[in-house]
Length: 126
Image (cartoon, rainbow, N blue to C red):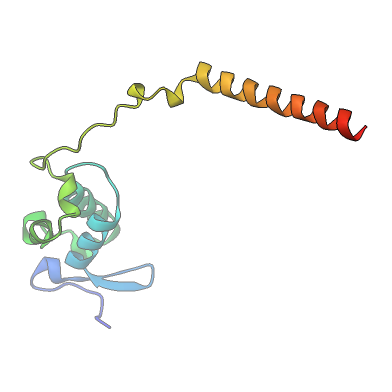
């Protein structure tokens, strides 16, 4: 287990946070890939998070981390890129399934069907 403290290379400094020891670079990568920011700046957001949590990481510049290398190797990580092709938008308005009036009509029709079948069963079994 690495010992907490500073390293001559700031991104290799070991941060002890909530009982877990990891290098600043490893913590930034972990946060960038597991925090669903929905923004193209996942590395920058993770970098700021780690710098705020670990004093020993404050000398670690984002450009010195391996976040950019991860971006080149992991396709799921690229979805946050500004240069990535945007996904096709989902047009929910084209589907009438989420129309409140239609939903109300379907619910009323279902209630009526259940009521009629209940009355029919009552007539048959008395």
